[in-house]
Image (cartoon, rainbow, N blue to C red; front, side):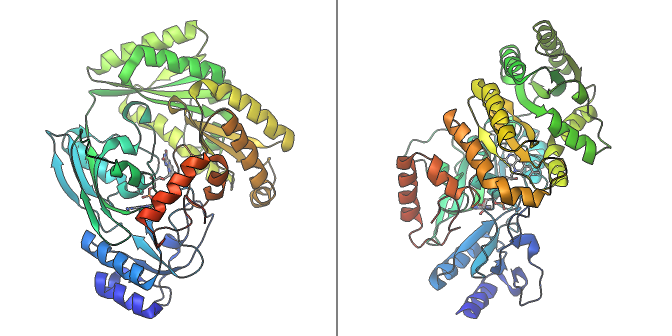
Length: 474
Ligand SMILES: Cc1cc2nc3c(=O)[nH]c(=O)nc-3n(C[C@H](O)[C@H](O)[C@H](O)COP(=O)(O)OP(=O)(O)OC[C@H]3O[C@@H](n4cnc5c(N)ncnc54)[C@H](O)[C@@H]3O)c2cc1C
């Protein structure tokens, strides 16, 4: 039966695009997740080249009773895109679906296939003189299909929203192997249930995204970046309010970085010169996207920072003098996850809290963790403007990271998530649930919402073949 399915898949997509361990191929790139938290075993890695082939693969797997794990760039951080270790799941890689199908500059839309790498999507928009603003550190390898399946956030959410807000239409292959042709470029369409919004963020559990029509924006005349040392998280939140008032929609980025997070970049990437990090507990990166001119943006920034100095919200600041300097500052921010990975395994939390509560949340939770595990190190950084913190917990200096994780992960997660719940936050702001947080979701999600989610899954995928065990635990 198994070899019959693999043969069938070979006939659908061509032998070169069905990879198996028996065929002698090393499948680690598809079977292991980015953080090396899980290494499963796939029956086969199947790489269809178009939507019709995806349909045929889904139908074949459904008929044979084998479940499917969709995968884009495999940069997900919650173990959602790799197979389990049963050896029976089909890993469906979408990366060969990578064509730009259409661009409509007057409608400000771009239609691309799911396997397009995010950076290629940005570049396609740029070539048309427009902006696709979704931006994250993994943009050189993650795909737009994965971005939509996880409703990715990134650094521009403050102004442009999450991936959901940047998508107008989808083409989706259902669990039954039908195609929903939903590639609408409409900004207004009130004809029933919001199926697009249901599929976005469903992490491959409700349908396979094969293409998307994306919303583009006019390119700003200038993007200016500043880096400020702030004396506390309270000051960072107050600075955010000031910047929102002064820059309005021009404020496209507001990232906070704790001193320990920056010290890891300094240690593991010594070639990067990080401004001001040793003189304050937090640094903030601000971006002002201006539709007028660079001199306008610069004078806005100068006035903002002047007021912030006077109010004691900023102790020192630099404004990038060139695009290269601006990229350098963003590069420091985006290097934090990589520096952290260099330091060793850690317990990651991608949480959101109402912005107003972030300082008290951190003060309380830092203290509780220090009491539980003296010497524990907190890698705190994130998209403060969106109330989204990467509140990560690293072993005390000198402790073995793997032993630390085994001994403390469960306890630390419970402590942090209980605090998140107390402050009316979310245990997953942008990375999603995957299998890493599926059990936790059962505990922290509203039971009625959870019940509705189970009913939706049952209705759309009654056989349970799409990414089982992800989002909803069995
Ligand atoms: C260094 C680094 C920085 C990151 N920064 C951010 C950040 O700032 N913000 C953020 O939100 N995330 C971030 N991430 C997480 C990750 O990049 C995003 O979740 C990204 O959207 C995943 O895209 P992908 O193509 O790699 O998807 P994958 O990892 O391959 O898959 C992710 C999930 O989507 C499903 N999936 C993939 N493609 C499809 C498809 N076509 N149809 C249906 N389901 C599909 C998979 O089954 C899986 O559940 C970061 C990751 C790294 C490594």
